[in-house]
Image 1 (spheres, rainbow, N blue to C red):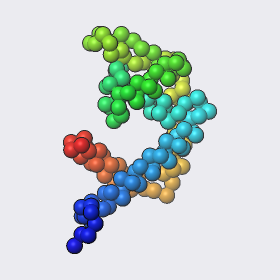
Image 2 (image 1 turned 30 degrees about the vertical axis):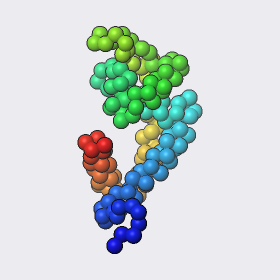
Image 3 (image 1 turned 45 degrees about the vertical axis):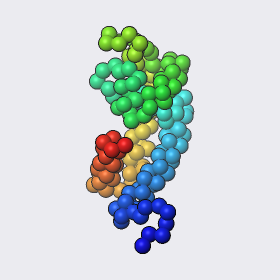
Image 4 (image 1 turned 120 degrees about the vertical axis):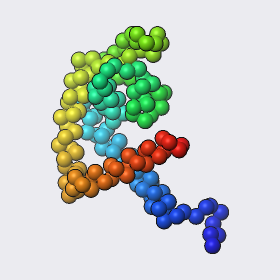
Length: 155
């Protein structure tokens, strides 16, 4: 009998709750470590993430589309894009499909900053992966992808 004022978890529900708490902690640690990694480049994890989303996109996108791809709020991405524009790392271009939603593009300085961050990322990721197999990492990704999809489908 559940004497708590909260509903009882199933075994899977309890494990998922623990996983979510672990993801929150890992996210905080990832952001702090990412900030430290790219700080010498004048970047933060958030700026690096936005630069990456712009760089890896097949086409120039407005902030709202970048935010959707990144799973973040439009307002959060807009703040970062404004900071990047102030640093000369991105520029706004007219959007032929929407007068107010300008397209975000990397400047040459932004491309170089992203490339420099990418050069630091591979050795860093390789070091973090030591002791883990590619299969273990793929399994963790699979669970996180499934969880993300469920959260999108059932907010």
